[in-house]
Length: 287
Image (cartoon, rainbow, N blue to C red; front, top):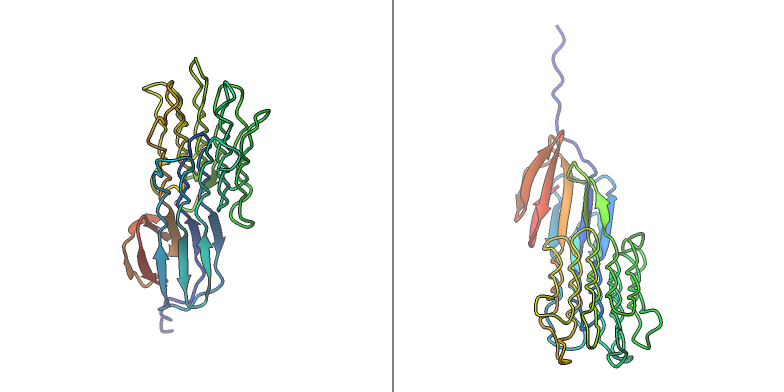
């Protein structure tokens, strides 16, 4: 009678998704989404330790421009360090305060003295849009290789802020989920009511306008989405606060049988033959 040959865990590759924090909105331009990196590793040696750092979303700057989001990082021996760059900040209302560069560009501003100017939307893996026909600032530039197949931020009309760029979908957790949407631009209509730019799909914050109820929306947490621009009150002051950028996230998909089962800081779930580790904060795991 032949002896059974035991099945033992082996070295393996795993899938990952790394999204940086989104930028916060400016006075008129929406915040850009965080960089978005996803791929499958080469074969990794079991027992290798991996470190995860989650980038915070851009904070409220209470001024013209927003703040850039922070980078998210996946690193460890045998893996080229994966650094998703934080989303660019949204622009202010003058030609000197443009949208920030980042994983995705921050949206452009518009000149406050132009009646009915609308801010540009933040990009989602792409360049934040400039405002058509308005002598305002330009949008920020995206970083090559950081998910640049996402949607561009739109250009604002004469009274309505532009929509943020749409995010990117991933099925790493089993079902398709869209993340990393750009923030909406603010609507500005002196003497009237400006329209609020919609946040991009995947969690982008809505842009504000000049009404008491027209506050900017935050980018959704742990999606890397950009915050909406804050706009102005009818009296010309800031309709604060700016929309905050959404924090980033790192997700890894590991073959359950081969994985060591060692991790810290992640929520774990099972999808078929795989274990999904979702890091909403810093942590680590062992391949």
